[in-house]
Length: 435
Image (cartoon, rainbow, N blue to C red; front, side):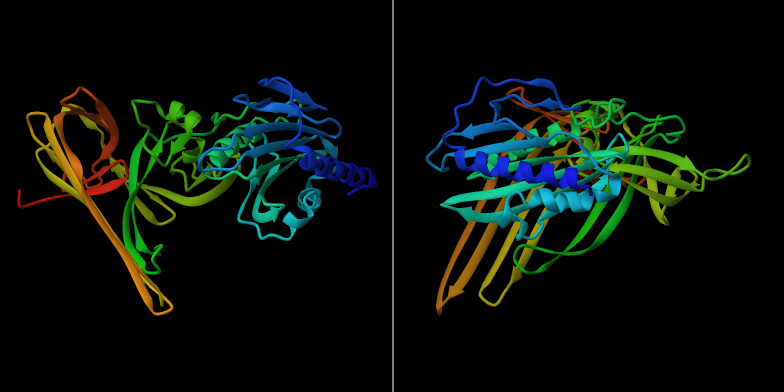
């Protein structure tokens, strides 16, 4: 990096230190929202209580959160640099310099890191650190660097005494702001828009993924997930079924991290494509990672990276089912000083006349042993029963209870020509053959 680049980052560090020292005393002007030009960098600013703060090399926004019975007074601060002239390869070094604007934070481990490209082809890197305290103020930091061939920019979210819902709301605003960044005048808005050559598949396909994974109690759980991929013929794909009757395009606009773009490659005039390129949105910051996997067709089904993906037909409008389906979950484990378990069961009865009933229960227990003293807690409860009418259409199940309230869920049958297993909102419901 050149000396001019280092000097500007140094001035940014001084400005940030001043702002953090004055944050609780700063008097801010009115809130605003809309697109903003920051020395050639275009972003869409959040509203909902964010205010402009400070001057100089950093463009800054601040949002204050009042003290409550459960939380201290807190603040969130967003800093955005003007574009810096520097080559793409200097992004990693630039991140280290920008993180060091909070010297104590630079010593902390990275909790979450994303790396990929943006929708406009720029490199993007996201790092998150937390865990330091200064004068009884907890501080966490999320830093984003975006680099093109000739220039780059850095954005930072600093959270002071924020956690839970308040932290999540500030992070969601920051994520949307990052997705809106336009580093070059030719950059487009963040959107998953298929290009020429994308697409070629249509339908919903399922793949059975099984294995074991650790749980919060220190044990291991067996899992069996019917993962789905929904392909749009124009080039969009989603790993979740759209809810509420939304199209895949509407779903991907609202929940981009479920989605991506794909194209089939290879093959020739007399043969089908031999590989599939999948460009997935891997974080709410808009990072995109590309994977190319072997691909072939087997009748109506697909083989991707040697895994079978079976075609899942939609339910016909007005279709009905008849039987009782049960979804169960259990997890347990123990360590040298504690043990715990949790279990739940949900039952859904569907009748051929279009009516339903559902019930459920859950329970949990935990014990701890400290200094020879043992303590524990056990709790359980039943889910209130519900009944009413249901409708099936495509991959959608609507349950309307006696009060007229409707709950919409996704549904599909992973096994062809069999209703022995239903996947409802991502959970497995096995049919009780004794009914």
